[in-house]
Image (cartoon, rainbow, N blue to C red):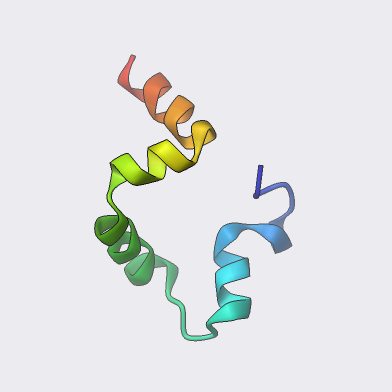
Length: 55
């Protein structure tokens, strides 16, 4: 789990790496570029969460 504290949330980590990161625009662009299938394959937690939404 990567989001166990507010300061370790993925968006905060990205901001530390790239101060111009904008969660609401850059996040969706990154997901679109990577593809949901690749994200699900790399992150079992995301895959399991998406499966619960589909039920």
